[in-house]
Structure formats: structure tokens, C-alpha cells
Image (tube, rainbow over the protein chains, first blue to last red):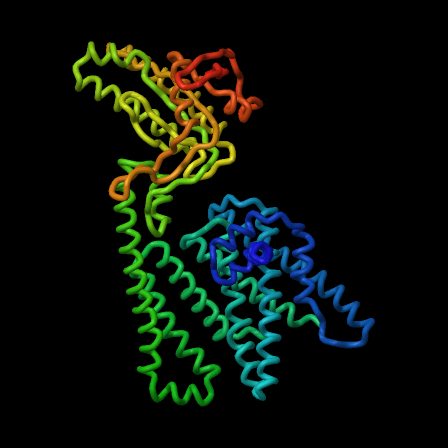
Length: 185
Length: 304
């Protein structure tokens, strides 16, 4: 029975393999049946959490921020889809939106969880500044962008130099999106 | 968050490293490793410059050593990857060599086993037999070279169709072919695969015979028989010489059913019929008595 639980857990965690640049993770996401509106909203919601303020203002900001981030994320994915199509991809828009939203959700969630753990570990060992710098300077800033770029090309069905172009554009657009998000309250 | 060109450049370099590594893994092209090495040196310099602090100062004094580390790692990776590539090539060579003698399915099964020994297990499979009708008189009339040539042409067609439907060609017995469905690769719909395979075999052999007739060469019509049931599947033989095959009553019955399959017909047993009755059309139901069976067998002829 425990084996079956482990197997089920491994199966459920399969899509997370994409953070290790695994084609298996991409395949599993391709096969998943999910509500992409909900996933897109969740991915936006995590990034839209405002700076702590009065409870009423906090909720107001959270709602407006979520709407803004959802729109931006949708525009970003639509742009990437258009570029991929222009380069010869045969993927359908609905599939691309669903897969990219899920990838964005997984990346944001994982990054925040790992960053939280590392920062707390830093506090525990008495070097919060160093660990904070590590998180800020390496993992979130670099890794998440790179995986996002790779996902953008792989979900478009590319595994060649055209894909690299899509990946680079995806990274640039995501970077721009995060700059706009940082301007939100 | 403000736009920082150096951070953006680092992200793109990391992306370049990841992409080059993945391309190298896929193609084995040395150019990608050189690209990775250059990018790694580039990023290690920028990263330590930006975030290094005291480590950065130390890095400046020993930059040659620090640059050698990533290069060393990637050279080691390159070596390991080339070893793996060599191993893959050897496996492919073995596979190509043995694919002339056994089915791809069997090669996969054998290559995945740590140790190959005799032994078998019970498994439900479907066994398909084909047999050239009137072969004995045909071989008496024709020169042996012509018989072998015609047989090989037939076997080529039959083998290709068997593989297409996921079957494992077990053996050629004179003018007969035995194909296993459901082992070593398990297919739940092995009976249906076998029947569809039999139908396609009859259609393609009819086409081939048509071509032979036009060329003035003798035709070789075949009969196909299929039975489904439990058989012993595995490596059967001695420690020195063995066959991956199926044995048991299911196999014998499939062979005996050949008596019921006329030229251009696909005859299936009752057990096969039960598994495929919703998917195929039956044109005739018959009863035959076979050697070794007390009760007569019910045989169904499938519409080709």
C-alpha cells in the first residue's frame, strides 16, 4: 500500500520535473487536463500579493493587482504564441495558454517556497543577509527565467534554434512583466 | 525592480548554458560543449564580480584556477557523454545485428534483462499461424531457388504486418509463420490486434499474388488461424541454446486450426471470437475435429 502511495505521489509530482529541464515533465503537462483559467488566475494571484497595509486596502490592492497581472500574463503568453506560430509552431492557442499558465504557476510557487526555506535557514544559522543575497542573486532571478524560457520553446513544440529565439523572447518579456509587477502597490 | 542589464545578461548566459547542454545531449555535437565552457567561464566571472565580496577578491588572485574548475567539470562531462555515446552505439549495433533473427520486442525484452536464463511464466496471449496453401505441390513443380525467392517475398510482407500490429514473429516453420500477440510486450487487446493483423495479411498477400500472376509467376495463397488463451511464455531450451517462445495447448490449437483456414481465410477459435466479437464481422461458423481433442472445435471465419 505504501508503495502505491509513493507511486501516486511521484506521478502527481511528475510535472515538477520541468524545473530540471526534463522532457518527461513537459510531456506530463501536455497530457494534463486542467482548468487553465483557474491556473492562470492562481499564477497571477501569487505574484500579485501587495505590500502589507490596512486590511481593506490590502484586499483592494490584491484584487486590482491580480487583474493587472492576469491580463499581463495573458498578453505575454499570447505574444509568445503569436511569435511561435510565426516561426512555424503547430500548437493550439488553448493548449499553449494552459501549459504556459501551469508552468508559470509551478515556477512561481516553487521559487517562493524554496526562497522562504533558504531565507529562514539563513536566519537560523545567523547569516540572513548572505542567504537573502543568494536567493536574490541566483535562484529566483536566474533559474526561474531560464526554466520559463525553456518551457516557452518546448510547449511551442520547438527543440531547435527557432526555439532558442522563442526562449530568449520569453525571458525578455517575463523580465518586463516582473518589472511592471514590481511597480504595483 | 529596475532594469539591470548585467542581471539580464547573466540570465541569458545561464539560458545559453542550459540550451547548449541540452543540445549536446541530443546531438553529441562537440561545438555545444565549447559554447557551454565559454559561457560558464563568462558567467563565473560576472557572478563573482557582482555578488562575490571577499570571495570575489580571492577569485581575482586565483582567476586561472577558478576558470579551470568549470572547464574541468565540462571536460569530464564531455568524456562521460562520449563513453555513453559509445555504449549506445554498441547497443544499437547489437540490436541491428539481432533484429535480423528475432523481433524488436524480443530484443528489447532480452536487453532489459540482467541475466538471461531458461524459464517461463503463464500469460494470456493470442497466437497467429499462417500457412501457404498447396505449398508441397508448388515446391515440387518449381526449382528450389524460385521457391525460396517466393517464400522470402511472402515472409517479408507478413513480418512487416505482424510488427505493425505489435506482434512478435516467433518462428518460420517451413512455409508457416508463428506470431505471438501479448508477449513480451503486453497488449490488453492482443486478440483484436491478432485478428486485424490476420485480415491485413490476407489483403496484402492477395495484392502480392495479383502482381505475381501478372508477372507469370506462381501465386502463394495463405490461410490464417488464430487462437487466444493461456500459454507458457519465456526462454525455452537449454542453458547454451534457447528460444524466446510460447508453448502449450493454446499454441497447439492455433496450429491445428490451420486445417480450417482455406486460402484467403482467417479462422479464429471461440476464445478469440469472444474477445473480438464486437469489432469484427463473422461470415461463417463451423465445427472441426482436430488431433488430440475429444470435442470438436468451433471455428469462426472472419470477413477479410
